[in-house]
Length: 92
Image (cartoon, rainbow, N blue to C red; front, top):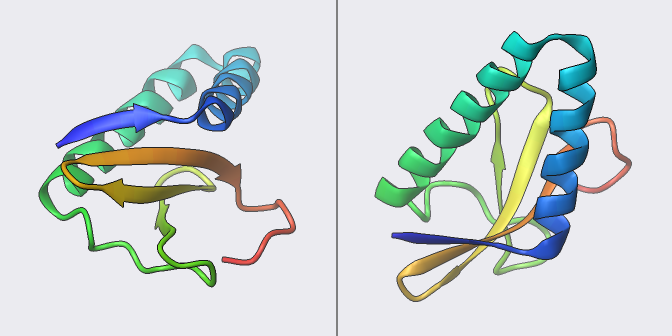
């Protein structure tokens, strides 16, 4: 399974990493590990995450960090759309 990242996802990721960098470098490492776990899981089970109120967009909730990833399936690839902090006022 190939992963592609939307520009918005990249901006969100940069914002999150910058935030955690200011707090503790170990948090950055843990956050990146969590994203790798998410990718490994989605590579095996791409349809496991539930659809949002805007199908065909799916959402994946990170376990250790308060973020969700919105993504769509495109054939043999997964397009990561956004990385949203759970405090953002957006519907699940």
